Image 1 (cartoon, rainbow, N blue to C red):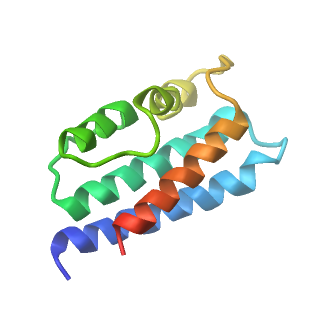
Image 2: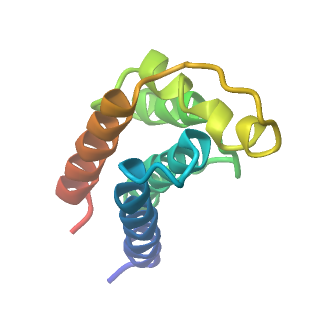
Image 3: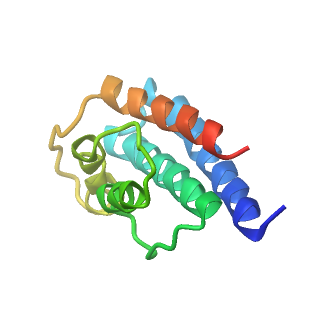
Length: 127
C-alpha cells in the first residue's frame, strides 16, 4: 500500500464521518441548514482530496470545492459534479459558520444528490 493510497483511505474515512453527520442532521428541524451543509461541504471536500491523494495530485490546503475540482480536471480526472454546483457549497465551509444570515444558495435535495454522487465516485476511485 502506497502512502498516497493510505492517505486517500484516511480522507475517505473522514468523509464518511461527515456524511453520517449530514444524513442524521438533514431531516432534523433542530439542526440549522447551514450546519447540515457544512458537513456536506466537508464530506465532498474530503472525497475530492481522497482522489487527489490516490492519484498523487499535489494541492494546496484549501476548502474551495470549485478550485479542487478544477485541479482534478486539469489532471485529467472527471469530477461528477459541475464546478458551478460545487461552488454553491463553498460558503458553508467558512462564511455561514460565522454568520447567521440565511441565503438560499442551494436546496437540501440538491445537496443530498451531490453528497451521494461524490461518495459513489470516490468509492470507485479509491479502493
